[in-house]
Amino acid sequence: KVMASAMFKKKYQRHNRSYGEAGVSDAEALLEEGDWTPPGPPHHALSLSKEERKRKWWRWCNLRTACRSDRSMKYVLVFMSIFSLTSMLLSFKVVGTLHGQVKNSPLRMEEGQCKPVPAERLDGLAYICNGKGCQIDLLCFSMSLMRLQSKYEGRIYVVTDRDDLFEGKACGNNAPEYEAIPFQNSSSTTRMHMKLTRAKLFDMIPDRNAKSLIYIDADILPVGCLHDFLAAEDPSSIGLFLDSWCPDCNTYLTALMYMKKTDKTSACLSEWSKEALREGGTAYHKDQDALDTVLTWKHSSCRAAIQTMSNAYIETFDDKMILPLFGVITGNAPVFQHFTHGIRSLPIWRRIERQIHAQLVGKISYLKELELSKRKGSGDDG
Image (cartoon, rainbow, N blue to C red; front, side):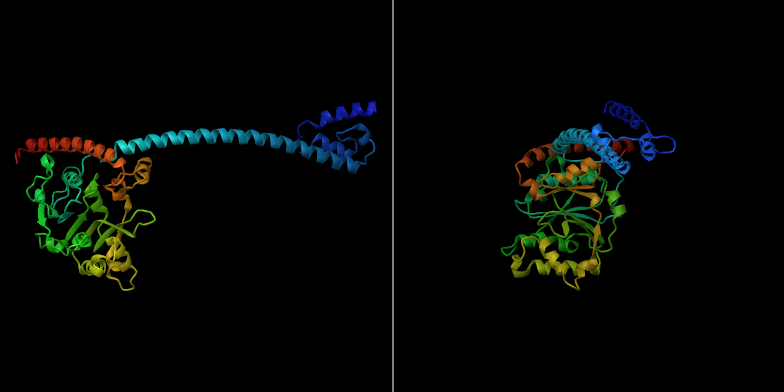
């Protein structure tokens, strides 16, 4: 037994050597020669045949390998857990920082100078601002940015029933150049009638020769270059952006419509208005719901007239602030930012609105000074 134990220890040490050039370990060579006692109590090893010793040795060897693998896997899992936790904490910190940036600087305006958009490129741009529901501050800022930031040189129209807009007092010192068009209110006028004024814009504006027109809501602020948008998007009849993703969202966003004066456009707007004003304008809560219904019709004119524009040019500032946060992370530079009713109905809107005002007052003042200096440099005092 003493001799067998000594032989076992000696040959066990040999089995731990690395594989040879032939790819066979010392232990395997010894097994083939029949001169190997597998690890274990000597008195068991002496009573085993060659094949039994071989099988027992491989089982023992595999067990050791499995134990080593389990131990290594535990180390790997511990490392991965620590790494994942650290990454998650850092991500929360980064996202929190970016979220604060979105609140403090909600507008992501183009830093460089935009190319001018002459009146020949776009015949008109129209807003609708009626009653107390009109966001007059946003309207004034949107028009000012359209002039100074996006460099639109054509005619801007405001369909309104407000005296301060006709008198030019609504925007104060930031008053941009625009033309007020009267909106005829009556006792039968509903909220839906006001919304569908956009379907009659070609008939309401003074320029009867206008062939292209953009309707834009007052809560959409142009922060990029209108020239870039017009260069990329040129619908033949009606261009619309897809609506945001949410449970009650619609197919298209009608807060901004790029329209051409065509028969297809007239037919679509007529169908849409007729459906939306069904039951005296009370059949639908939103005009977009009526448009969704029209789009389901087999022979709908709107299905042929509407073309989808790229949503890369517009960013919706939703109530969760997910989309602007995603825009900051990806570095997307929109031409328009849409501050929806969802975000404007939350308490956080007061803070965001203050920051928008701070950003815009500084930006508009700078752009006005830049414009004046250019005029003086060119000798144009007007």
